[in-house]
Image 1 (cartoon, rainbow, N blue to C red):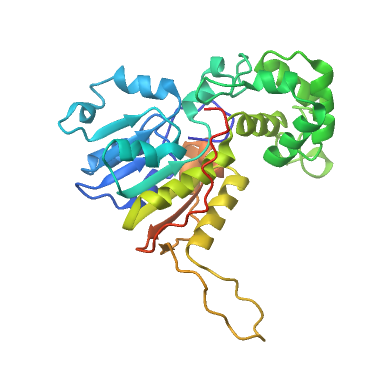
Image 2 (cartoon, rainbow, N blue to C red; image 1 turned 90 degrees about the horizontal axis):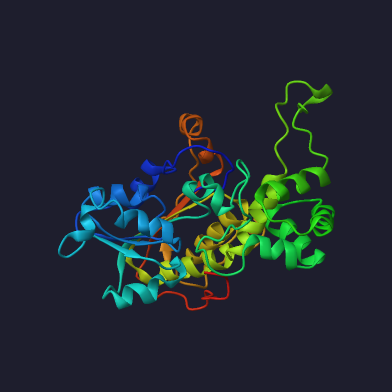
Length: 341
């Protein structure tokens, strides 16, 4: 998956690093919580693992059934590829129904998939004009419903919270004034005009040497997409579900493309490892008061220059991983099902 505007073909981001973090072995049961085009799943299957793959996008599920030659594992007895056309926050219930109580690994690749970005009719991007949709599951209120029906303050809040848009009020005011907005191109033009975007501008002192100005519509599109799909609530619930399912020694690997997502994963693993801040060196050191449900929390991994050059969508990716301990899972992680699915 990816969180970046563009037209590059689907390439699994940080693939080798994710596989190394999961360390799949023959006979392992692993959850690919965000199947997409199946890049991670393919490598996990090739290692001999059984994969339970989740995706709420019906197009991703249909692509497997339409190409059985690429996925022979789905027809094996028992199958080594099991598809779940559901949100990954529902993975506990789905696996219980499949007779699976614990797993050896969970991989999550958070954000919108390359296939969704590249299909104009899905309305996630503005490289080509299309209907303003952005729904991963194709159900529930669309981006058009939000921008045309929400009040100005609600739109401004979404743009600020999820898109880091510092001029969110100005953009929201322009959106309301331009309604109705039906296509991705229309919305992009409204945002650009509100922010005085000049694609010919070259950054840097004196207008030299800084490169082209980044299109500010990217921030608004990202924010609206996150809101429409309830992505941050889904991430919270998915992380809690992974903690519940992972056996002792099981591995979690999460790839994010947005600072808000990465912050959530970092805090989740920090809390789960019972890490405490160093505090003042003048005060006695205190021992953790909680037992760690995660250990071996790895430092953040980011793509190298070669991968970014080959796949520009990888440039904002961050991988965080950890190993599950034998401590019982926490029970306070949200299972909020309110977002559109």
